[in-house]
Image (cartoon, rainbow, N blue to C red; front, side):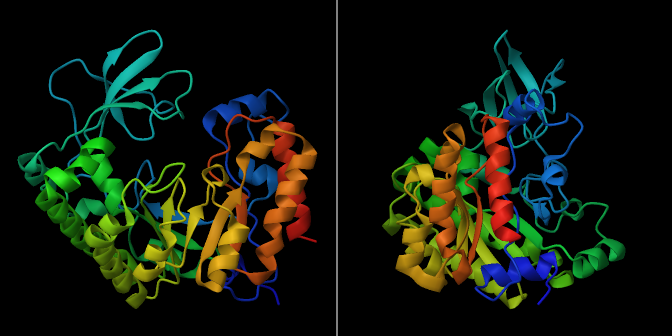
Length: 381
């Protein structure tokens, strides 16, 4: 049985038989890449090509220049004169500099978020200073920027030729949607958003309902014209020991909207639905399964997520991508071998793509290369 990359990816996450695992070990953060270039990785080399990683096509949230735009239209541009744009290397999205010193740069990004960035480690989490929504009046103004029917939501690339490409390409096609907790945090900041569940519950209810309708209407054109193999709803709703919001609150405010979006997507023949979240997700998995999700990533090991234990508890109800503990890349090769041996013990059951559990930090290139080659030997054995 010989499968192409698209068939292999879908079959693996659907617990079906495959000829081999998808080979997607993980991608480096900027500071890791800088380090590796000084440790033997050719400076002109793309890591994917150097190691022969399998590819996929991703659209939606996370794209610097979106194919499908789920952001505010028009974007935020600071008022006043003299603002310069920040370097692409410092921010994930276009931003305008409003303050700067020797060590940091303060910017307002295109989502209206003011943040302070450390210049020499741009991939480190910035210090968030201010968010655009503080009260109901701010939210009413914000909604005007999220017209799902705005023709600018789909790039000029979107046309018959591009649609045909997506429908016939041998690579898996994945669409990323900014989720409910994700956007609430982006609109208000995590602390203010969490407080709002108690101090402004009607604002939160309206925000969740509005966002549900927006996601469905904004993604409709894509899922009705293309075969989207996988949709990931980005939430990032947990930290090291558990979710930011109690399961009861999630059940009340977010679960009904997950169900509505997932029902819509599954009716449009999306094969795999993932909820992506950092942190400890163990209390979230039952809610995700109830909502209709098929699995999750990146399954951070440092947050007490154990793919082997989760598989034992949920069986083939829950697929996973990730969970190879990035921390072992700082240690000895024996530690890497031990981690791989343990996590790879479940791959024969399907529903698991082993991958370093988030962006690869600044670790020795020798260790990353060893991990990738060991994984490659296992997959292509």
